Structures are given as C-alpha cells and as structure tokens.
Image (spheres, rainbow over the protein chains, first blue to last red):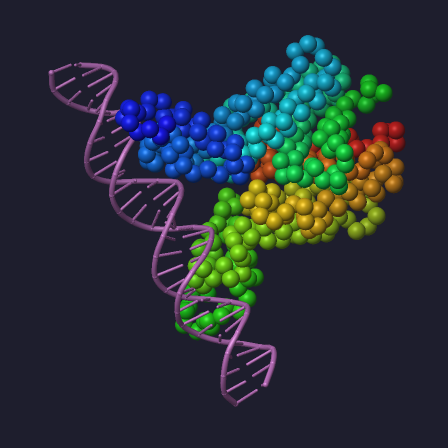
Length: 205
Length: 205
DNA sequence: GCTCCAATGTTGACAGTGTTAACTTCCAGA
DNA sequence: TCTGGAAGTTAACACTGTCAACATTGGAGC
C-alpha cells in the first residue's frame, strides 16, 4: 500500500479498509489500543483521510464494536448443533463458542464492552448487540418447552447465562482461569454449575 | 492547592496525593481515563513531579488497581453478616456487595480488570487481588461443610461465582441490566440461579 | 552547627496523538 | 462539456507521556 507511485488519488474503498486495518491492529496488540494515524499510515493514506468517513475516533470504535457483535452472533449460531441434540449439548456448545470467541479476539471483545465504544452511540442497546442475547433466550425457551429447564421468567435466566459467559470470558482473558487456585477446568465447572441452576430438578434425577 | 505563594517546594506527601487525585478523577469520568498531567495540575505540582514517585503511568494504574482490590475485599468482608446467618443470606449479601462496589466505582472497577493495569505488574496474580477470590472460596467451603452445598471441587464453584458476579457487574455498569429484555430484577435472578446450581438438591426440598 | 548529598520538584524539550481548516484532485450528473 | 461536491492532502493547534538537565531542600554524618 505504501507505493505512492501508481496509487490513484482516491482510494476507492477507504472506509472498509480503515475498519479492516484497525481490526487487524486490534488483533496484534491485545491491549485493544490503536492509533488512528497508524491506521491511516498502514492504509497508505494521509492521517486526516479517515475523517472523511468517520466523524470521530469514537465513531470508528463504535462501528467496530457493532461488527464485533455481528461476528459473535454468527459464531454462536454456527456453533449451535443443527441436529436435534440434547439441550445440554447445545448449552455447552454455545457457551464454549462464546468464550472461544472472546479469548481468540481479546482486543475486539474488550472493545465491544468498553465504555469508550458504548458511550458514542448506544452500541449496547442496538439490535445488533442484543441479537447475541437473543440466542441465549431462544435456547432457554427451548429448554423450558422441553421441560428440561424449570419454568421461570426466561429473561432472568438469560441474564444469568449472559453474565456467566461474559464473566468467564473476561477472567479467562485476564489469565485468571489458568491459576491453580481455580481448579482444573474452571470453564466447564462454571457452565455445569450454571446449567444445574437452570435445570428442572424434578425431571433430571 | 493552586496558591503557589506559601506552598513549600517539597509537597511532603505527593505519592499519596497523586493516587488520591487520580482516584477522584476516576470517579468523575466513568470512562476510567485520566491524564497524568491533569493529576499533577490538580495536585498543584509540575507535570513531571509524579515521575519521581512512579516510573510510569502504567505503574500508577497498577498501584490504583491493587488499591481497588483491597477496597473490594474490604467491602465484601464487611458486607458478610456477622451473626451466624444462613448461607443463603451470606451469599446474597456478598453478591450484592460485589455488584454494588462495581456500579458505584465504575471507573475503578474497569481499571482493575483492564489490560493496561494487569500488564504492568502481574496485578491479577498478586495476593491482594486473589484475596477477593478467597472470600468466595471460604463461603463455599462453609456451605459444603454445613451440607447446604453439594460437595465438589470448591475451586470450580468459586470460579463460577466469581465469573457470575463479575459478569453481572460489568453488564450492569454497561446499562444492559436496565433493559426490559432482561426482566425485572436480573441481579437477583442471576444470583438465585447460581446458588441453586451450587446447592445440594437432596437437602433443600 | 555546618556541609554535602540524595530525594524531591521544576523547566524545557521531543515525538506522537486526535482534530480541524484550507487547499487539491477527480468523478459523476446537468 | 462543465462543474459541484465527495474524497484525499497538507499544515497547524492543543494536548499527551516521557526524559534530561537543573533547582531546592531536609537530614545524616562529621
């Protein structure tokens, strides 16, 4: 991108390039920090060019956060087993996919839940962000319909699930779940505990 | 602090003042961002003075994070009911205190779990940070000893608890738990679900 | 009591950042 | 064909973290 020789004056698709470059930089430094000027540099464009596409750095962050929620949503839905499996399998598949997403995109995941990104636009209240929540809710509804989970306000259970997965993810990212203090497989332990709190005790032995 | 007239050349206790000022600024902007120069300004001291007490901004952040863990630890232990209450009461008291701490110190809480603070020194692996984990572990051990909680590797259960509380706290801070999507009292719902996942089903009805 | 030194505070500089304004280039629609 | 506006550039501003060189001081050792 650096050869200024034959590069046309107009980039052509700078908006997308900026986002992609920023995403790539987020992947390198897990500190989820990147500089707008460096993004421009890598895109082979002057440092003020991005401002023709984003009013603000915060706007770019918000956009990226939304993109992150899209990807997370996709990761969860594709992880969900197609065949009519037991709810337990689905539960673990989704849970593990959630944590997996976070730990393999720590910078992006951090950004998605950071104050800077959320403040700009109401990222977290957007449909794209809440779609993730929807995946969990659907799963619980199915569980209740099948009688595997106890009948309760689904929303509360979904909140518990979300919180649990989010918590596990962040603590794993921080390296806290690799501690011997936390036992051999804390991720599974946490998921089991959560699931058993949701289950219908009368049915499942 | 701004009157340069009678202020002595040496501040006397700048280290503490810097930390306190930074803490105060953290409280104002929930964005957990503050600038070293502004801290110095408020402390009535030149912009380079803090460098005589902290090698780095990261070092200051790390120190503040550790202080945060101390405060959280204290908040949890003082919230724990003194009288020999039921475990359930203790559980809810500690859980609510945890979330309460986070939501009333969002900047500090964010800092405590941010990558920047953790990277510098191994903040999260320090005894002061793990003391918080100890509170949860103790609680679960008591529960198992009393037969209220099912006997299992305590560490896994403690991991689940910690993750759940951390998750609830962050999602609450983000305003996600004020959504109608999430039901009337998501905090309690999440805690109940967690507790019932830990409980010994044979004993409790 | 005096002296000197190390700790503490100050000043000035440097590179780098986000952001804006004024200017250029170039494509698309009249 | 002409032209207006979208897209990119350059130059500047105020700000940041950090460092080196300098100033001030309280206190340890004589």
